[in-house]
Length: 374
Image (cartoon, rainbow, N blue to C red; front, side, top):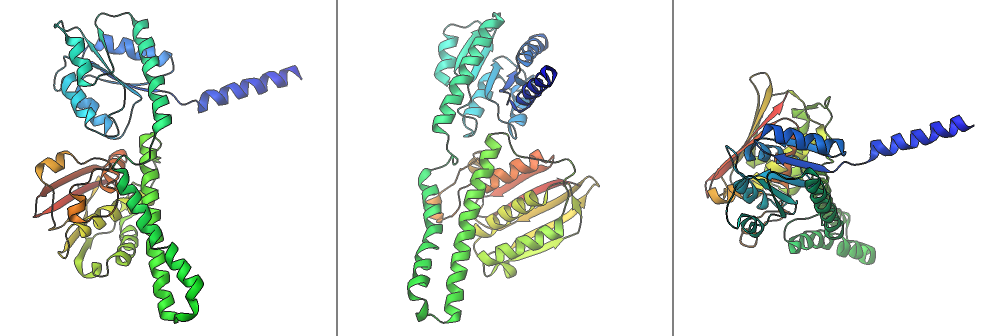
């Protein structure tokens, strides 16, 4: 009996250890010895540590991974700590992540300068490792409390989220009341028309909430990608065509598809999401002009999809500021949506080991190129 209890207790401990979520640390320092030492110390203390040698390598990682804390040297090649910190703080999904500067640099009021820039703390090299450990534990604990208390699904303007939800509900609830109270006054054709409005509004609300939850999964590093995922491009295009035709009556005339069949290494749901979001965006912002979607195998390893429109395009400055929830001139353009589609499409493709590229000229149009692994 005692052996059984011991085994059961051991099994519970193992299970708890497996499901325990590790805190994630991004370490950036060009000093290999120091980097390996800090990496090893925090790994032993059960942190998930990713370490790189400069700011540019770190930015490449942050495209599809969000840490709970960043430790960063100041003097580094390629991209120094100051420029990296400035870049990170402009990204909404990263702006609240605690940031600790490390440096051997001797400069009057350097600590004050770092804190005024928005860093959370500062350590001079050499330092006692226990001081860094305590600092990290304190900052992560505080960050998690703030995130728990003030975590919001949507990172953009809250009024736009309220508008999107209310618009969808206004296409559902009043019509349900009309059908319930005045059904006898309508013929079958009118009833079907009202049903279509409810369906469109329901789809819009479903898409809004799905995008919010997908974004939250990204923030929590919980997007799932299976190695053996596979989908057919033609099947996905056919599905997207039907969905877009329900939203845009003239879409069949406005979209030109030139797609060659291929099996792509990405889940069907993610492929459907990316194609729908980007093609729908192209239609939405190109008004009555044509959108061309081409797809061909590319150098055996990739499948290349190009989505090209002749719409309003992005300025050079806007291209640099594309981010989750970021919308440009929403009121002027009377655009719908939350501004998550482009950001999430780029993120999902990169996490699927694909490549995302966008070029655009204001008032001339946009070309998005996607390389999917085959």
